[in-house]
Length: 244
Length: 264
Image (cartoon, chains in turn blue, green):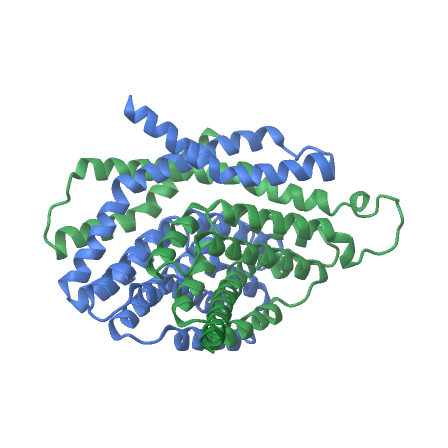
């Protein structure tokens, strides 16, 4: 009985994520546009799938991934072996990003657009290759970002010099990268950091800053996500320079 | 649809394998500890895969079409020029697009659970100087303004990097003046706010706009809204901290002044 109740509660909270979108779109359709959205039937089925999917996803994350990920991050931070910590930070960033649903969706969309405008061949294999290439590039760059962020926490480097340096690099690369990759590259920074990555990476950062003496979790614990939103821009542009 | 679900299920399973291997590998290989209640953990992974599958198919069926169809309906000639005049469209004609973009950005951000969690944490760590509501509202304003400006950029067709560069310059200048404590949090707030549900909708909106506005190419102009949505909260969160600091300094100064006059 309590399991059913828990499932219903978590279904309701998944539904709550969609409420603002439904309200805003509904308001515009009824009062401003005075039309119905195209394909209303399949949209309703899709919305139900999203609620169902988010419910299972979050339920599963809280049962499996989060407890083991958080306790691992904490245990490794305490263990004090820099080598394993560095390997773990890279793998965590890489693995969580590959599983990130928003990135999967946007990469598939980007492949479709690239194929329609003739930047890549319009068949299933090249579409899949392009989307997977984008996702692997982003996953590697998030891995490197978390690695760099952990080293920064260990050494206590100030965050803004690295970020500003990163911005400068983004600007330099922008003038060399093909125009068709720039928009996707800039977007990939924001896409990567969502449902799976943020909680695990924040746990790693705050855990580390708490364990190391003389560190303030506010100043040092946050900031990992900022790196993870910056490096994908750089690497995706390099990917575009090589493959487009 | 059944075939689509099955195919997505297989692809999702492939995507989740690396993170499972990493976590179990470190737990068993490096820490040399057994996995606490592994049955539950394994079941959790199965749920994650099932959930992701439904979610991805749902995105394809619902959120992408909603974004596209809104972009489509908000840019039809009949809607832009209801009087039927044939004058070429100027950027002011797309006012409702900007308003829609801002409304979506603000409402999804203010309801975002991970932002609420970050705001509560920031409030604790800052000893109460950073208000929970204040932080949420400033991030939401940043996202709303960012997506709206991004839509304006698609409509006028400016190169994206001028805008992003301008934003970066503001961030760099603010970094030198904003209270130190807020800086990492502000940088993070950019990435945190764009949730799994918002990202596909906003991406579809941008692609739809670039397809429908004359003279725009989806490949070059269609992306970038998410980048705008991640950049502007950095600016608005630092601005919020600067305003809070300024007000409390002025209050302190006024109080001192009062005490000074009292003493006289």
